[in-house]
Image (cartoon, rainbow, N blue to C red; front, side, top):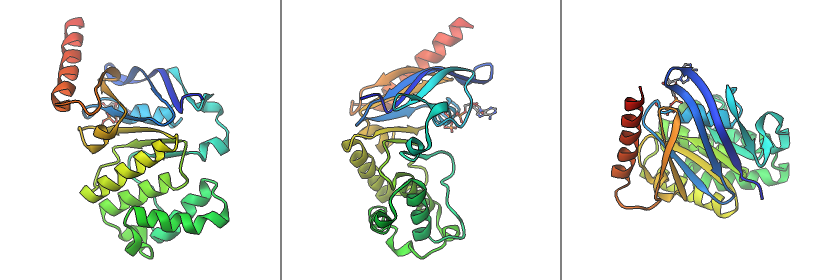
Length: 243
Ligand SMILES: Nc1ncnc2c1ncn2[C@@H]1O[C@H](COP(=O)(O)OP(=O)(O)OP(=O)(O)O)[C@@H](O)[C@H]1O
């Protein structure tokens, strides 16, 4: 089976030392791959590139083996993503937003109601079902965005800082959702600027610094923080010397 996502030598430069400057990574079926980096490392730009949202200056992206520029619509329906702010129709209720998300992702009409109720349950949004999205707290908006992105059980999920704004219960709901997805064969790429819960459940952790993947961390390894900063610092020193 092809990789769920394959990024090869991606370049999207926004200036000297800024943007994505040659990054490669793969997400295999059944794998949770965490992308860690400090603010400005290039994680969001790389994830946008993975989703065809920014044009690359060099390199390429394949989703399920197909170049992203040629990915047909039904394959896009099998990709769930949350980049930047969670998307929701402000004037629709939480339940209606989830219905729309399910239909947009190609779920058959007969399956929608049950899937929406299941999502409301797993993200503890049941009591907010009739509430307009505009009225939600930041954390619940994030839950809604995640529930919508993942409602159809995508083959590939690309989530940028998904723990942002989540309380501990939300983080646990996210962990369960990601593990469930991966257990079903999906690939998950998830970014974070700190070593949160998501990095701890990852099968693979890549560290990004100043536009490049500079190494990996042992998932579940002791003292991830120390190992992370050691990689970043070593890269900074190497590049400092190269200047
Ligand atoms: N459209 C753009 N135009 C110019 N510069 C940009 C643009 N998008 C991103 N950048 C710059 O590229 C660098 C990488 O940004 P990016 O958002 O990809 O990093 P990040 O690792 O996601 O950081 P954060 O954790 O802060 O979101 C930053 O210096 C940012 O200012």
